[in-house]
Amino acid sequence: MGEVLFKQYIYSQGYSQLNWEVASAGCWARPDQPATKNAILTTDTYKCNLWLHSSQAVSEYLLKYFNLVLCMESEHRDFIKRNFPEMAEKVFLLSNMIDADFNIDDPVGGTIETYAITAEKFMSIFIAGFSQIKNLSAQQANPG
Image 1 (cartoon, rainbow, N blue to C red):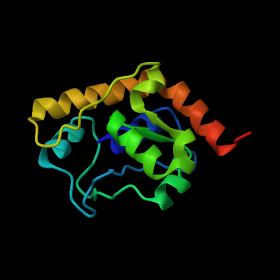
Image 2: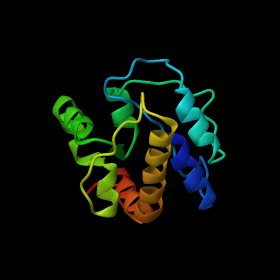
Image 3: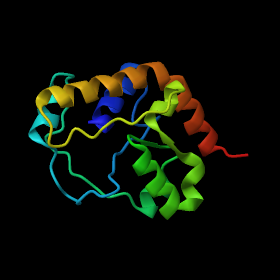
């Protein structure tokens, strides 16, 4: 959900796929799994399409490819920093983008209401934290 919601937000701000590349991955994800029904229904309300989404696991390749890694939970952030220490400087909690430090619980297995709450949290952070996301992404693209 975070991937498609963020893409929709940045495109609404006038950016294109030429400006940003966004992807999601899970620390313990089983590859090639479809989005859950509740995730699809929730993102549909935002005019986003998750029908063709397929899960992927965090990998060294993905971490090297992207300038910035935003995690929902501190357990995810800590896993990445522990297992890929050379990537640690570009790994943050999503909530850090609004100068906060809280987890966003994964809604998998929850009700449609749980998914809706998660989507609202994503969107509020994307909106309030977009300048921070842009700045950190640019810093990581041009270190030093």
